Amino acid sequence: MLITEYVQILLKIVEAYSKTGFIITSEIKIDARTQKIGLIKVIIEFADDSKLFVTEYIDLRYKVDKLTYSFHYQDKDRKMIFRYDNALHKPALGFKEHKHFKGEILPFDIPDLKDVLEDIISEFLRK
Image 1 (cartoon, one colour):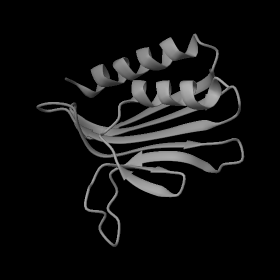
Image 2 (spheres, rainbow, N blue to C red):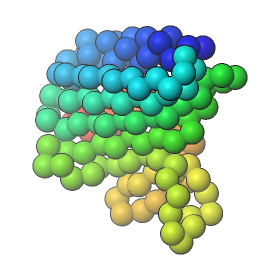
Image 3 (cartoon, rainbow, N blue to C red):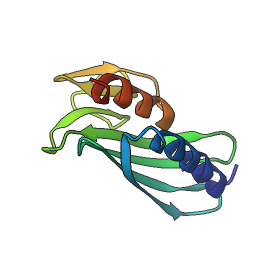
């Protein structure tokens, strides 16, 4: 898969969720290092002024391999609600992929944009 194809998938996901009325703006930037390796940044603003910041450094040569990633969701006052990432911690956590939520760091599988948007809409915006 090429980076341009991967970005088209992301665009379709954002477009589908934009039809719900929960997303008011979105932006996707690509920094392609090759046709199959690059950095993708996504910013999504929701109707309640909360925002999702996504950063994925991906390698698509053999499969979708998210070398580093962060899905950072914050409220309108810029306070973190949750963040999925695979950043190293000191002291070591004992697991790489994790989620920061309510002051805890929990092991969690690598998310995709669709799952994160579904989580945000169902848990935080449909109240």
